[in-house]
Length: 342
Image 1 (cartoon, rainbow, N blue to C red):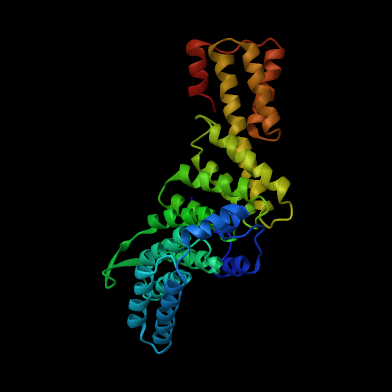
Image 2: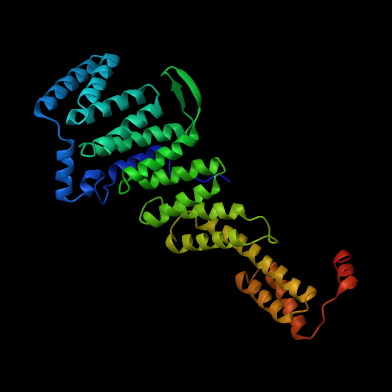
């Protein structure tokens, strides 16, 4: 089963743009004053370099405004190559990144923007960088093809978006895009049948961002993912128990959700499967091991898990038989009873 996207992309982007993060997006703000000053000193450029870089940047922006984008990008590259530690270099990288985005070079754009994160942590418009990176990763996720030499379309690379979304989470863990990036990792991983990776992303979303508007979707998708791993009532029930746990959590945490009806139905389904598995175990001990004590434990579990299920009704009948001293059929007699029943 595919995970259900939380919200349409446009709506998610609108929500993210309007929400205010509890912490700064800019990594330089995570340091103390002394560390921040040391960081500034380490990256400081001379006044003459700053002036030269700013002049080149202005020339590039002027060319860009006149529609001469290729010439503008050449100037931006000159800024970043000759004056890499200047303030202007950060803006030049951002403008290069948006240029690559406008030409569908999403991978190149993302890496260019990542350079700002690594080398210009004090870039004043850090939120724009994360937003642009999210747009790049989303385009790749949705099947956009890269371009070899900026011209020749290549294969789709949805898997690359997982790494990009992961970087976004690390770049701005307190930002509004982090939970949405984790949800998208889960979506892509599920599509590529990387179930463990999908579960990990959803688990991080609910643990690190429990107040996110995407938390209900994460709980629901986690429950659905585990439910899809359930093979039958005769197999290991670890996935069944996980699914039940997340469905129950959903009902407790989000009682006003419009998915409550669906979740209740799915929870009942999982409980019935688990109850049936307990009945099978009880029958094993009752019919094949002549161990009434163990059988009673599992029969009672079947009733407790899903009191109104068929398995619970059968378990009650078995318990009544044990209490009445009825001996189970054995050997060939039991096999005949199974083969010719009904």
